[in-house]
Amino acid sequence: MYKKQGFTLIELLVVVLIIGILSAVALPQYQVAVAKSRLSAVIPTTKEMANALELYYLANGAYPPDSTEDFGFDISVPPGCTQAGTTQANHCPDGTVYDLLDYGTPTVLGGNKNAKIGYVIWLDHSARPGVRQCVAATSNATANKVCKSMGGTVSSGAVTRYFASTLGEATTSYDLP
Image (cartoon, rainbow, N blue to C red):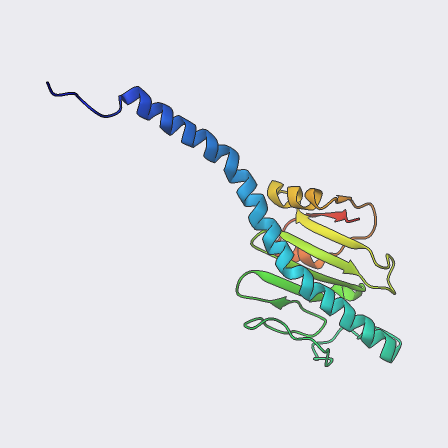
């Protein structure tokens, strides 16, 4: 006698339901991981830019003035990025942005416009020497989760303006430990 093999409709629906539930749980964590990796990618270059500005300060007694000149920092932006001195940010094709001396404020910012998240280092001769911040678009829950996962607490001090103008929306700054 021939025995029927296969799955019933109920069994298939249960499997589809389980896959749907698992993906609903995994997708937000995946989005946070992607945003965190994009932020992690800009941190080393941001630190090197901050170090270059501190060396410039040691050699010249001041940070460079707002200018479109290349001040001869001993660093270079990643390949494919534009370089615009200290008055404008360096924009990269992948959405990465680097900004030196935000509107004359002694900070260095590295961020990703696509993930709507950034990393700020306040320079040694600033209003907040040595403070590190995570900056996220206020409306982007994933970016804010990343900043909080790094131990960030909402900043009550001065914040940078350039990243907010680049994103075209309000940002929230988190002081990092």
